[in-house]
Amino acid sequence: MIEIKSSGSLKRDETLDLKSIIGRKVLTKKGEKIGKIQAVHINPSDFKLEGITVDKPGLVENDYIGRNYIQAINQEGAFLKITPLSEYLDKKVFDARGRKIGKVKEIKRSRKTNKIITLVVGRGLLKGDLIVPSKMIGSINDAIVLKYNIPN
Picture 1 (spheres, rainbow, N blue to C red):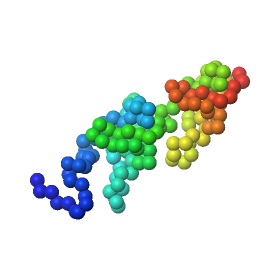
Picture 2 (tube, rainbow, N blue to C red):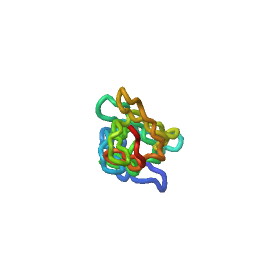
Picture 3 (spheres, helix red, strand yellow):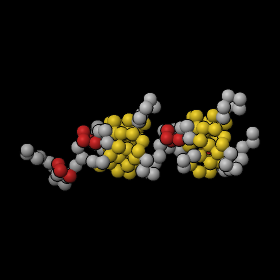
Picture 4 (cartoon, rainbow, N blue to C red):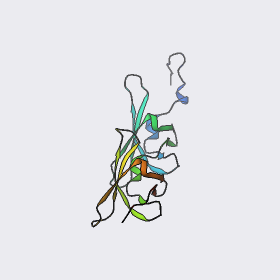
């Protein structure tokens, strides 16, 4: 094969063949697999990476992850700087005393960022939903723990 390239550009074997990473894993900043690369999006003007579409398991909607949230992409897959907010859906929510409040039903975010504005916590049919502003969130790990106690 003859290689024709401009000065200063990488050799072909130093680049990433985008077809080869379709179907590869996508990991969060914590190393959790959230799906597979479904598509790679390139800016047609400057040919730079704009983002990826993540094919998520099950019947959930796929995620689009913009380039600012991607740490690296290589032959192994994509490694993110974040945990996408969609991963918090259905997580258990506890108040400051450790009492279970419910599960995350919906997430309101700031525009198209990964910043939480509020969580909608489903507490069951009799109690109704609870709106939790981001300033009330203490920590997010396997579950979400609030900074305050929630009355019954």
